[in-house]
Image 1 (cartoon, rainbow over the protein chains, first blue to last red):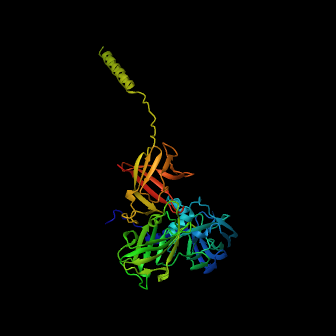
Image 2: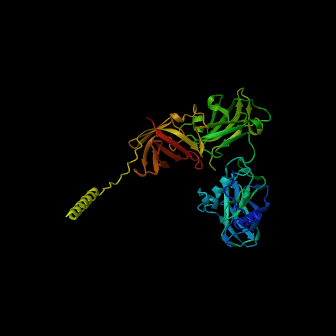
Image 3: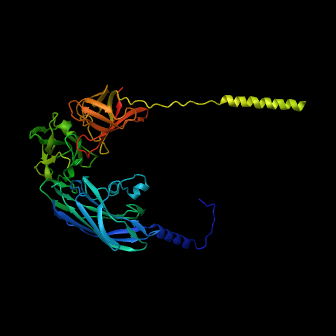
Length: 342
Length: 153
């Protein structure tokens, strides 16, 4: 389409370059990079896990200096209650200090701008999800500096944030992949543009914390997984069986069934008789050739529990139409699921 | 003389106009609108259900878990459950609203229970149909369920 305007600007390209340069100078605020992470890959439940995130911040601020809090978010298992079991401090070229857990009433900047008005923890969950983990029983724990820092223009700040997390207070053996976000309170986790975030993000290495309780693997594909990860017998429970992880070919499709061998109750009863091949226990494939088969059931009804009887644990296999069984780690050993909230 | 007649006609017309304007004005008495009492009386069935935001109708086999058979009947301060599912209560009992005109929560007391349980409550009209939406946690408190119910005809 031919333009109606025929305006000739002398040195047009030069002006375009200058305009872009001016925009870049006035609008880009901070570039934050987590340059190094000191995080152990193993730990013991109940003991302190020391983690240090080293970062570099390059500022380019209109109307500088700004007053802002340093903020760190870290992805942890919910069962650890890491918000109450972590101490955090920072050292930086602009000063040192302590950090405290961010109150949920403080809203994240980008979410204020787009009207969703989320806390920092909720905003990080929305933006970064559960990182490289597979089970959503995780939360973003957010700490901020107790003091606001005066951040000048065109300066490079280097510093470290030290976290001391009392790991695995639930006593479980937990396997997961932590993740880390560092930002400041003026920009939050917003973006200058699609390729320039105002925050630094880093996935940490796989971490195994050994405890005496259950094994909670949040980051590896599992033969069976349950949603919600924490539930009671009066919740709806969705069990997913991943056929592709049965490399030993212990069971053959297309019909797979939930075979509950034993149910334990709070009054120490052992209930049996829930291993059937019926429509009630049939798993259905999520989409064609996905290899993922699901069943959503109500345990109280599935186990025909009378009022006052509470299931605490179910021990189960997946079986096929011929009665072949597969269990934990693609063996004959049964899976165990405990009905609990913590 | 002719001028005077014209003057009288003009005056007459102005007077008639003034009478018309005056008579057309009257004070509107605005009667305050009274918000009706929210009446739940009747039998309600579930038309939409979610767990932690995920649609339960698409997850369950509805021939096994029969959402369309679950009903709750409100009548004279009592409620009665049929074909129970995970719900805020599992036994019949009594109910009350925190405010009969502008309710925000509904309180259920199971027969024989020592304490009532309350749940968030909305009561909008959607596509001309009154929808009762309840949010509750029948199992772990971190698992949130929402059921939307409509009256059974």
